Length: 484
Length: 59
Image (cartoon, rainbow over all chains, first blue to last red; front, side, top):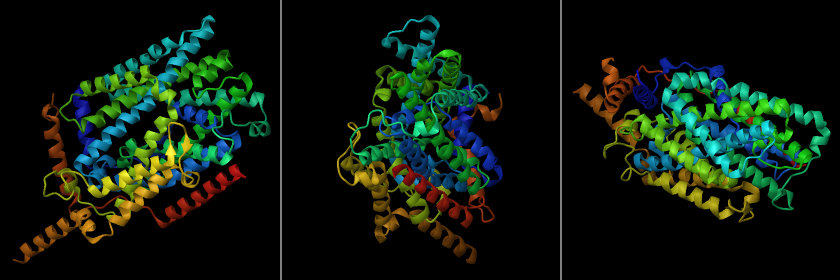
């Protein structure tokens, strides 16, 4: 089978509902897969960003507490693909309509590639750092995006080779990032005691008011959790039980994700304190640390970046194929590579990392809460599988010309609430309520409440629950026919 | 190359969908085990631990 057929097959089996008897992943398997995904170098970037506004004690407790707490709610989403056997992108046809979800999908997936742009940034500075250590010369900044683009090119070639090669190459991710973590810890604890570390202050606080800094950091951490929005539906479809899926995801996407970000925070702060150089880019830390272990860590980061890039290119391209079935796998791969190269050369994601987090937050936050309200409270876990896949006007999820206006209104209300209370460009609160809820938190609350309250209005309820009425009608017709 | 491989994406998809939806909508179909009361207790306990961690960081 060639890679085009591979992608076709995978897209088909990625879209079609997975039957209970086909499930292969228990708790341990799901935890292992999610841990691999959460060991990405951009977790260091997150930790390095948080430490710029908070001292170490507040930063560590904020990352652990906020990321895990929000994950407890956010990751309930995996119950849907586990129970129903369909990707959350298919389920969202019920929440936003057939056409509505395509728009959200495009916005979310374009933004998601920003994480890969973070990888190209780290990749470029890693190679540049290695060159400096080896030769003593410093490369000009203009060269770094060109070095970063090698990550895209090599990732593209590996992704073209297909899933088997990618799986083998992805095994370098875990040891690579773990080695980098160990080197960072060794460096930090060679220079500081635990109590000394806890005394270290924020590097560049936004405000003199601790609470404002704390809530901005909380906002960034909530958005960090929302990064999982686009990939929450693939792995849980394989889950043998809701329990195994949910807790497996909590371990990987919740706890380990937060812990790696904590390592990043400790590393960034220690390097800044010792060398006087602050950056949220881990390759800069290793360049400053210097020596053989730092070189080893940078080599590990380079390998991890390429590996994660190839995994992302393959999986996101297969996912794109389900929306654009007539495009070849190669064509999709080329299109996404151009987009990542654009992000890489423009440098926007690394320069405006917090703004990028804001985009992820205002899309991934309210949408997931609307999904949870829709599935658990409005539909009470009952859906029409056939209507998920048939798109005629008579079908339950056709709504208004392919748009579920209740979902659209709730999402827009959440987005408006977000921008009313938070200015993501200047990292400033626009209203006092931000210091209680944050922007992403408020947008989740507003979107969930609007959707839930609107769904209580009888005519809106009929509009949303057409699947239930169609199913009941079908059942009644069946019984009537049998009686006749 | 097998016949199945030579089918285009839409054909393959439609065939798979029909057979799987029929099975899922059959009366005897069993879903995977659901979350239990213990899981919800676990979630609440984990949430309390997180709140304690956050409070430790603030005071």
